[in-house]
Structure formats: structure tokens, C-alpha cells
Length: 329
Image 1 (cartoon, rainbow, N blue to C red):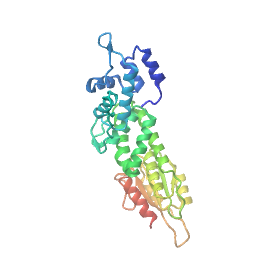
Image 2: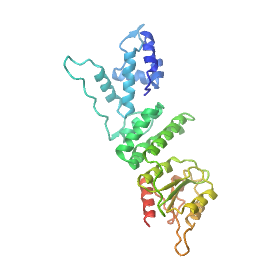
Image 3: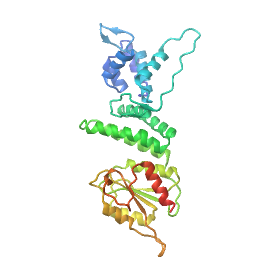
Image 4: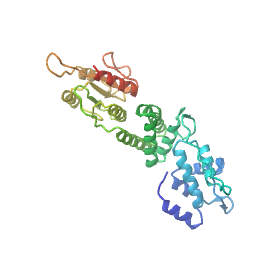
């Protein structure tokens, strides 16, 4: 939701003359059809029409719709949000208390957002709506709430990743549209991860994990969440990000002597079994007590391209468990 005053509620709704539906939609960052739908379905239309059927929205009407946007951004279904808005704006009887807002429902939801999310946690809806509106403040708050409530691994698996996948599908099916939404959401997820678990775990000999994308691969966000989950558990991480050249990867492994190396490949065209095998055979330490890293092949690009000596954890929880096992060797 826009948190500024909108030019004093759009100059007091154009000094009493009211705003058009299009002007209201631009102010809220939603489509005009959404505003009309809220009017038709839930009775959130303007208090008065001018010139017959022409809608003119006053400052009070605008405030009511802004409240609607704020509630739906938390994941509340539009029908429930509308009931709360109408209850909050209704005049209570003399001496009676205003109706208390009901808390946002948790658990599963099928409420619509314009994205094909399927049967997902309620929080996915709020995250998706905030991302589609490019609402930075709401998105940060929703991401942090999800991580705090469910824990990092569950928040990623059940809230963040389903929303990212839905945005990705929308992008793929809409040409070049929604690219900005995917980039916006990824950036804010990355920020939430760093705020939750900065990469500051103290070094422990033999406990470091090296994380890098294979050459020509730039999808770093899954590695960022793994790095945050390991840091949350006090395990030191060396994060090298996207498209690390082979020579640099080998140098990093030799210099750090890690217990585990995670190599991310999003595409089968970037996954390289010879590279993973080469890294797994790098040795360090004194003669007679030398060690090798456990190489984890991470991401969908490795499907069908690994062998028993190169573990391929299917998800975040399994990757964390594999690193913990490697560290405890």
C-alpha cells in the first residue's frame, strides 16, 4: 500500500469534486477493474455518483480503499477484508465499542491474486499482492513475518518459493510482462534473508561451506537462502554467487578447505558432472590426514546428471542436513 498522504488524499479528492475511477486506481496501484469489482462485489463504491452513472470518489472513499489494500496485502481474502473495512467505517451505536478486526487467517487459501498459486499458505497471497503492486514496505513486512512465524526453511519452502514460481510462470506466459515483479520480489527476498541471518558465523576449522553457481549460471537466490539457513545454525559460509569461473572455484576450495561445497545449476546446460567430480577430488591438509569436500549438486539442472558420490539434495531442508552431516564427519 502507498503509505504517503497521496498529496493530502489527492488534494482532498480534487477539492470536493471527487476522483475518477482511473485516478483512484493509479493512486492505489491497482487496475481500474479491481476498483470496480470491489464496488460491485463488496459495496466499497463511492458514497455518491455525479452526472448519473459517473463515479466520483471522495477522500473518505479513497481512505476506505487504501485500508482494503492494506488488509489484502497481509493475505486476507478480499471478501473478509471488505467486511472489516465496512465494519470499521460504519458508525457504531452511541456507547458501543467499534467492532474489533478479526485476525488474518493462516493456513491454506485459494483466494485469487491474478497468479496461479494453487493450494498454498495464506501468506503467499499477501506476498504476491504486494509484489504485483511493487509495494516495498508491505513486501518487506510480510516476508519478515513469514520467516519469524514459520522459520527460515518453512518460510522459503511454503511461502517464498511458491510465490516466486508463480511469478515466474506469469512472466513466461506473458511475454516480457511481469519481469519487474520477479526482479522486485527476488531483491526483497534477498534483503530479508540477509537481515534475518547475516553471514557472520565464526570460522571453525573443517566446518566451512563454499557456495557458488557453476560457470554460466546466475540464479543465486536459492544459494542465498541456503547460506542464511547455515548461518542461522552457526555454520560458517563462503558465498561466491553467480557464474564463478572454474579456476576461481578451485582456488577458493583450496584456500578454505571446506567440509562441503554446494554447486548450483538451474539448467541442464550449465550442470557439469566433470566439474563437480573434479572439485570433490581436491585434497588439502597434512600428508596422511588429508581431506576432501563433500560436493552437493544443487538445483534442477543436476537432475539425472549426478552419481552416488555427488549428493543431490532435493530441497532446502535436505541440503542443510547434508551440510551438517559433512561438518560432523
